[in-house]
Image (cartoon, rainbow, N blue to C red; front, side, top):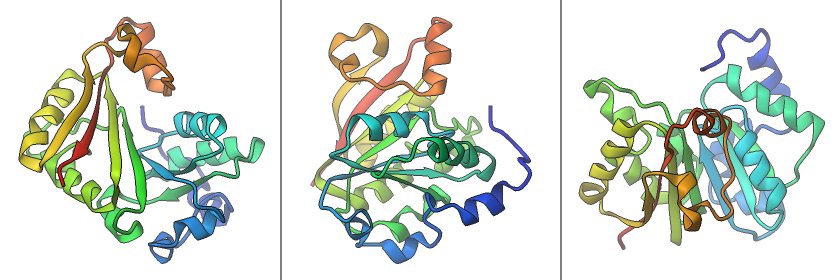
Length: 214
């Protein structure tokens, strides 16, 4: 459930050294920020940051950027980073619709979407992060060998996401309708807060890995 009205969250985010305040200025220069040439992976809708912080901790050879729209949620990730700073991770507060203003062509090596807002009403379909509209944006920033991983417990959203692939010109690399029973796709799996909660309730977790056509 989204947190709301966390007093002082916007001010704290504006002061935080873990948050990139003017991300459009970093377009095509993200590797300079990290001072290395490591691959860059991003999570869109990072929530409180558990997943991307775990990934950054496990993979110091990869640079990570967590993107979150809501200040009241992002502040929790900042609080965690204040307790355990990870040199290969930064945060951005922004709307995902602006993603191509922040990253250049081929600048991102992998995109993670985890338990995204399903936007259940049909008129809001374009707002869904696995929609063809967003897939076109992702294509513009992914490297030639890049791919996208999407996890959700929402069956309707997952069905929608699969239907969007062909019209958007993307292809399935792997797919499962019960991640935690799939040995191959569970290898190296890092859980989010939602994944841990929903899987403990017996809910199946859906996942795909996709890549765009050339």
